[in-house]
Length: 123
Image (cartoon, rainbow, N blue to C red; front, side, top):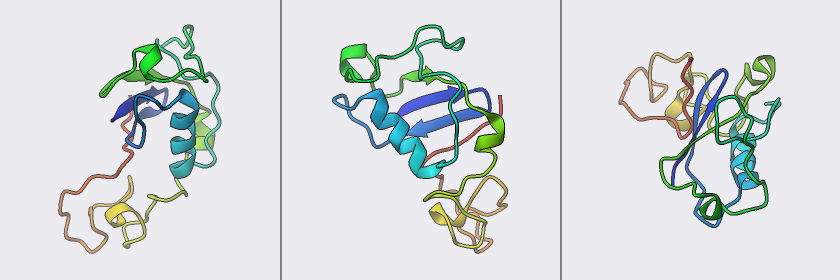
Protein backbone atom coordinates (compact mmCIF):
# COMPACT_ATOMS: atom_id res chain seq x y z
CA UNK A 1 0.00 0.00 0.00
CA UNK A 2 1.12 3.57 -0.63
CA UNK A 3 0.94 6.32 1.98
CA UNK A 4 1.82 9.88 0.99
CA UNK A 5 3.59 12.21 3.42
CA UNK A 6 3.34 15.93 2.80
CA UNK A 7 6.12 17.88 4.48
CA UNK A 8 7.09 21.51 4.55
CA UNK A 9 9.72 20.74 1.87
CA UNK A 10 7.78 18.46 -0.45
CA UNK A 11 5.76 15.28 -0.74
CA UNK A 12 7.18 11.81 -0.10
CA UNK A 13 5.67 8.44 -0.87
CA UNK A 14 6.11 5.33 1.26
CA UNK A 15 5.29 2.00 -0.39
CA UNK A 16 6.53 -0.73 1.95
CA UNK A 17 3.74 -0.54 4.51
CA UNK A 18 0.55 -2.49 5.07
CA UNK A 19 -2.63 -1.94 7.09
CA UNK A 20 -0.93 -3.73 10.02
CA UNK A 21 2.06 -1.33 9.91
CA UNK A 22 2.41 1.53 12.38
CA UNK A 23 3.53 5.14 11.90
CA UNK A 24 6.89 4.00 13.31
CA UNK A 25 7.21 1.73 10.26
CA UNK A 26 6.61 4.74 8.01
CA UNK A 27 9.38 6.64 9.80
CA UNK A 28 11.71 3.66 9.39
CA UNK A 29 11.12 3.60 5.64
CA UNK A 30 11.72 7.34 5.37
CA UNK A 31 15.00 6.89 7.29
CA UNK A 32 16.11 4.27 4.71
CA UNK A 33 16.18 6.89 1.97
CA UNK A 34 16.65 10.04 4.05
CA UNK A 35 18.87 8.95 6.95
CA UNK A 36 19.67 12.49 8.11
CA UNK A 37 16.16 13.94 8.15
CA UNK A 38 15.16 15.52 11.46
CA UNK A 39 11.47 15.69 12.24
CA UNK A 40 10.20 18.88 13.89
CA UNK A 41 6.68 17.46 14.45
CA UNK A 42 5.29 13.94 14.64
CA UNK A 43 3.39 12.42 11.75
CA UNK A 44 -0.05 13.98 11.81
CA UNK A 45 -3.53 13.84 10.31
CA UNK A 46 -3.54 17.58 9.54
CA UNK A 47 -1.14 20.00 7.79
CA UNK A 48 -0.69 22.09 10.95
CA UNK A 49 0.49 18.94 12.77
CA UNK A 50 -1.94 19.47 15.64
CA UNK A 51 -3.54 15.98 15.42
CA UNK A 52 -0.64 13.53 15.72
CA UNK A 53 -0.92 9.88 14.75
CA UNK A 54 -0.69 7.30 17.51
CA UNK A 55 2.78 5.92 16.83
CA UNK A 56 2.13 2.38 18.10
CA UNK A 57 -1.35 1.84 16.66
CA UNK A 58 -1.78 0.21 13.27
CA UNK A 59 -2.52 2.29 10.21
CA UNK A 60 -5.77 0.38 9.80
CA UNK A 61 -6.86 1.26 13.36
CA UNK A 62 -6.22 4.93 12.52
CA UNK A 63 -8.17 4.67 9.24
CA UNK A 64 -5.07 5.21 7.11
CA UNK A 65 -5.35 3.24 3.88
CA UNK A 66 -3.87 3.04 0.39
CA UNK A 67 -3.38 6.57 -0.96
CA UNK A 68 -3.91 8.33 2.37
CA UNK A 69 -2.12 11.62 2.97
CA UNK A 70 -0.44 12.32 6.30
CA UNK A 71 1.66 15.30 7.29
CA UNK A 72 4.85 16.24 9.13
CA UNK A 73 7.34 19.04 9.43
CA UNK A 74 11.05 18.49 9.01
CA UNK A 75 14.16 20.60 9.38
CA UNK A 76 14.82 21.64 5.75
CA UNK A 77 18.60 21.69 6.25
CA UNK A 78 18.56 18.07 7.48
CA UNK A 79 16.74 16.86 4.38
CA UNK A 80 18.90 18.74 1.89
CA UNK A 81 20.75 15.61 0.86
CA UNK A 82 19.38 12.19 0.06
CA UNK A 83 22.18 9.74 0.81
CA UNK A 84 20.34 6.52 1.61
CA UNK A 85 19.43 3.64 -0.69
CA UNK A 86 17.63 5.05 -3.68
CA UNK A 87 19.75 8.19 -3.69
CA UNK A 88 21.61 8.75 -6.90
CA UNK A 89 23.65 11.20 -8.88
CA UNK A 90 22.38 10.49 -12.38
CA UNK A 91 25.32 8.15 -12.96
CA UNK A 92 23.53 4.90 -12.27
CA UNK A 93 23.90 5.15 -8.50
CA UNK A 94 20.26 5.28 -7.40
CA UNK A 95 16.88 3.92 -8.29
CA UNK A 96 17.34 3.82 -12.04
CA UNK A 97 20.35 6.09 -11.47
CA UNK A 98 18.20 9.15 -10.86
CA UNK A 99 17.90 11.84 -8.26
CA UNK A 100 16.20 15.21 -8.13
CA UNK A 101 19.10 16.82 -10.01
CA UNK A 102 19.33 14.28 -12.79
CA UNK A 103 18.09 14.99 -16.30
CA UNK A 104 17.84 11.27 -16.94
CA UNK A 105 15.97 8.53 -15.19
CA UNK A 106 18.37 5.69 -15.87
CA UNK A 107 21.70 7.46 -15.33
CA UNK A 108 22.77 6.85 -18.92
CA UNK A 109 21.01 9.75 -20.59
CA UNK A 110 18.12 7.56 -21.70
CA UNK A 111 15.36 9.21 -19.68
CA UNK A 112 13.21 6.09 -19.71
CA UNK A 113 10.49 7.51 -17.47
CA UNK A 114 11.00 5.21 -14.47
CA UNK A 115 10.15 6.86 -11.16
CA UNK A 116 11.94 6.78 -7.83
CA UNK A 117 10.31 4.85 -4.98
CA UNK A 118 10.06 8.01 -2.87
CA UNK A 119 9.48 11.26 -4.70
CA UNK A 120 9.75 14.84 -3.52
CA UNK A 121 7.92 17.85 -4.82
CA UNK A 122 8.31 21.44 -3.67
CA UNK A 123 5.22 23.01 -2.18
